[in-house]
Length: 463
Image 1 (tube, rainbow, N blue to C red):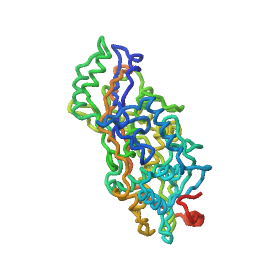
Image 2: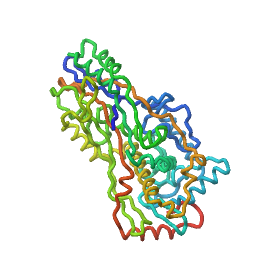
Image 3: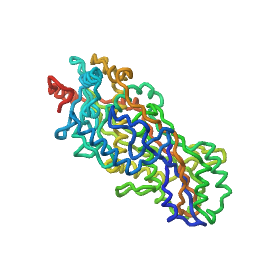
Image 4: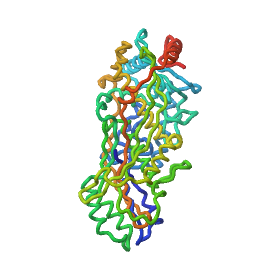
């Protein structure tokens, strides 16, 4: 998986020395709002994690004013009736059967889905899945809260500030999960092989930054060319795809020192590179990969619990050659490994500071739930028809402008004579592997029994 970053040019001038500057070529992910906001279905996938995508698929940062307008628009939407409300709940239950009925009822009346439905009753994550053959139902359960909107426009839990789950993402996961069987879900942002080869030839003849370092950096941008965005396992025009790109983009910007992590203990990768290194041109790759503990289940496989899970940051070094990048062929970069270890250690803290990293975990959870339902045929065991969610002719989800390219931005860093070329990173996970890794837990049955016993006569969610 690969992703690169996009640097702000203003930092370059302060760090540059014409004779000894080391260069970092960063892929800039730019995002602008798409032509169609599609706010009628949900709270918008058009801007996630501070990025947006224009009609040409170009990724870039969302302008501050656009972020403010987005936050205000989402607050207006949340002011509608039937929003997730009430006190935080440790284990809110959501009936998929009754939710399907609510979706069908809105379709029959030609009405938009209410916020409470769009946000799955305020669920912050899914910790349990209960199958109810007698009631022909599947119940999703987890911590939940009143919906609020933070300064960046992210819809979050009022108390914890953690992003809420979106029905839109669950629907996409259910529809796309079969296609993720072989390769999982992936996001990759890479320079083209032709661009890397051209950059290597250019760097081979570059002895100094010259009298006009800015001109040299702009030439590097032009030589390397735009970065390519690749999405697999989910539709590229989905909100989930944007979460993947946004999380990877933010990780790279933090790693390359383009923006602070906002937490102690996580410096940039570049800050950790010692000055005076003469190791030549490097293409370090950073990517995020999910890891789950085995799913707990009762002996009858009617009660499931999603326990501890985490995101890990991994790295390898590509070798820059005249013919393009040779993946993983360069010597291991101990500093890159140390930075990834810090990124992994502080991921939970970072997710609280920058919600897009928590949104990424939400999307992984929903994909795991979809793989569990599909792989274990829980809908058939329950006698539940999920067509109101899985049939695109009955429920259309927004199709956003798909991320396609990023602009390359070169920034100079004074690191002795070492050229640091940021090329790659990404996100990858295999939900099917997590859904099949299980362990038996007798206590799960009691949790299921209590949850189903509390189900009200009417309504699709309860605490």
